[in-house]
Length: 181
Image (cartoon, rainbow, N blue to C red):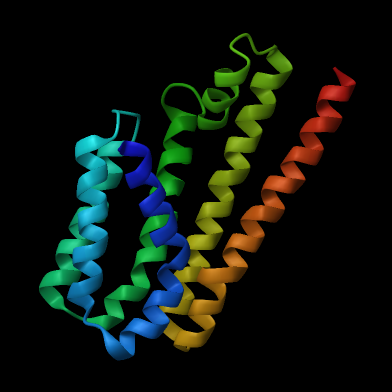
């Protein structure tokens, strides 16, 4: 059930900018608040306890509550900013407290990482932290000053393309690092 809810949140996140583009003319902000709030509440209640999961769900639920109470369509554009800030916090805090997030993920496949891999995963976590900071700043600027169409294009397509490029670039670099080990 938890995976189904996670998939629902992933799909909602991917489709969200396009739903907002269409929905700002046809649906109330409360509809979005109920849909997103329901998914985040289900996630908070059913997901296993992982670092950051509870405060992320809490922040998303607070946003949904604000969205539902205010019923202001302009607030809909702030959700991608919130998601980027939460991921920035998750990656950034992992650099300060405990094990960096990318190292934690790498250790799921290879529990005994060599020192070079530990340093590499720290660097990759730093890169993702920077990415989410820049992405949050761009989404904020588009939310404040750009037409809805530009916001939709960036948050619904360009940002995901940039993430895919970062994933692919990191994968290529990782293959070179492994070859040199």
